[in-house]
Length: 525
Image (cartoon, rainbow, N blue to C red; front, side, top):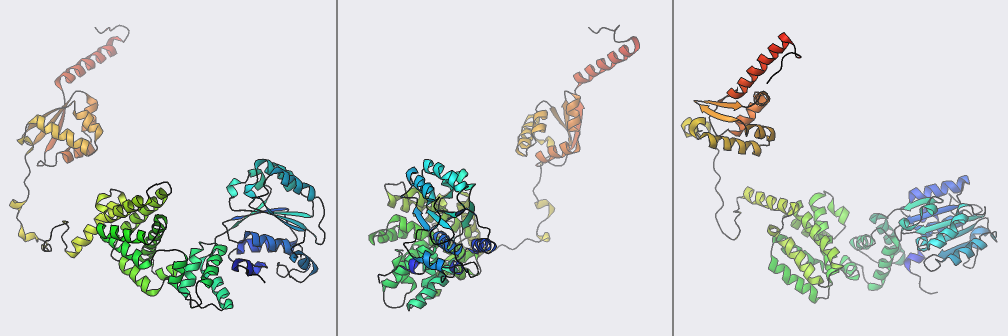
């Protein structure tokens, strides 16, 4: 018999073998057991998460004569009939190559015919998002009101491309990415059955490379079986995946985080000579920086990373010598570089620019870079290391904290008296400092106020009573003293100008006359 790929040989035939989709399995099983079947289902999710497998199991289960826990028994006449590849009651359609309106019209004509050997005729339409607009329109009415013997199962990886009119007629099930631990467990069981020796870290690396897709992980596992007849180790898996030599990448990142720009460029040249593309290098560097961040922040880091112990210890040692802010900034720089590489005609220049930018945080003015630089300076100060680059100096001696008896009042900083400077200069200082501390209203009012200093008293002469009311407030006085805190404490007196007083007197006299003789008799000229 011809060799079958692992993902085909170990495709589940019952709901119990469907990994990581318990929320979907529970719903489908309950529908089968309660005989509450829908007429149209939509299975959506990332590739390799079990959509097609679930559709095939469900197609058998709804036709099984004696289902076991909702799954097909595999022994009854219906199960045996559906196991035959020539059976025409479960029809699988690849919408990628049958996406025209004519194919859908043909489906509409054939769906009217009842099944031959089972209860339900099931149509599994894979990659349904590839149908044209006209094909979706042709399918619409049939999907809404199919014959009682027909069930449609639509599968897609790009649900956003499906029209809302189709979505509203289907029961939607979202397939999740599979946890790395569950994929690793499945691969271990398959390798045990195949008699393949392996390291635990190698299995975890294969599972992690699958990125939540069982089919992708099993394809890598299939390649790893043929890689060598001996025991499969972590480095073998890295070689299969095309990853860069981990020791060389670690040396590169160590020099990068230490700021050794020359060494960084030298290692890049060495990596390029090994035939590594800039895209792969960027991906590898990003992955290691992410692992360092995990080592820096998580107490159970190796349970997440699943790498060999000696490599994990190297990661921890490197992570302990750098701040989280620095790692985050480097990660951000290489993530931007990975995006730029897609459109660049000079990928090496893009990668080298990202590397130098990461190695020289002093030339980077992003918030994360500035935080990293501040943290580095704080660490140097704590250890007594000089912070001036390029100069060697002895550690700064610690100066003892002065006690109260070491200084006298005469040694304190003396303040000027408020009358020691010219009034115009005083007003300039006051206006400048009011603007500085954010007192815009006072700044605006005091521009039209006349200042005068006598002894230790600041006289403020206003041209209207409204300004007096503002300046008399306690918080306004406090703000003025705050703006002139370089002077000794002083008193503030607020007056109304003589001109304004005379005008107020005239107004008061006019009001009294009007009250005596009446508004209609008195005329003011």
